[in-house]
Length: 436
Ligand SMILES: Cc1ncc(COP(=O)(O)O)c(C=O)c1O
Image (tube, rainbow, N blue to C red):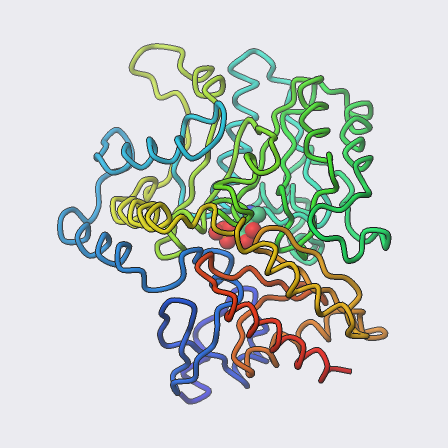
């Protein structure tokens, strides 16, 4: 492909000039592996982009999509239904713990976040608490790239170019960086007190102005940041004390990443709303879903009987082909026990990633379920340089991962075997050793 052929496509979250000088391309994918156009295998260490939880080219999903495309390609999303959307919602609520028993369909994680934030503010309004409009996010959080998600998010580069963002947003401090937590296996011991930031913000703004707090149970894109022990429970308690809704952004943690279907079950903390996408369709077709407790759904069900209760939705909400893909995905997860398989692989994975601890460049290793972050010391005055080098060099050595700053993230498909984990960690070891 000539330089000109690469020019037209403005690639997302990519160094376009670097990429177009040194393109990295995939041509096919199967199971744990991608193949490049010249036939080189690259093992998938990050489930595509945290989404292909069942690996690639899974027959049930492929067939479901093909069949649905031939049967009914599209059905209007507003005022008309089709069976697969209802079937999917029913199956999904059975996987989610507790009272999160209603589902609203979107097309991405970003749209799920916008939807949940709007639900939270409108929920308070329909109950007569229209002053509750503030939203609380967290530093280093990633909630997608739309205005609401960007505003509650806390990754500086994602925010600084885009003006004043949504008004009335404040942030909890992030929980990352305490050396006493370095090389923790699983949830870190220190930092529960960071949850008390929420109490502080309640005192600053008055709780009667706060609609919701949104957090990723495990921060993924921000660099694999794990919640300190007891942190999420304490957030729940503070929310309960002040009538604030708790939103879990489970776009990465949903669908088995931690060894339970959702992080809510893993941590034993039930949010009022949960956002999902990615693993919902195994990343194959864009789709997201917001789970809402029945108290929220019921609060909207008022007014004249044929009135629209929530002025929100997308042309592709519950798209038939997306629903078919999601049903095929859930079948695959169920048949192969994938939503709990991370629990059986977690110990092996943990030992493997922590074996990198002896490398002088490695500052911290953190892990939970089938996700790990390997953080390198930053090069003097050049933060993120080593991270990017590690990304490019591992790719060349046959491993796909992702980096944030100088943290290399691994989150392999839930079908990964020990030999796959060994290859990933061996490759990473060789690459980190080669970086100065
Ligand atoms: C926690 C979280 N929320 C939201 C998103 C945005 O999802 P999407 O890229 O599908 O809009 C992501 C994407 O990585 C995410 O990790």
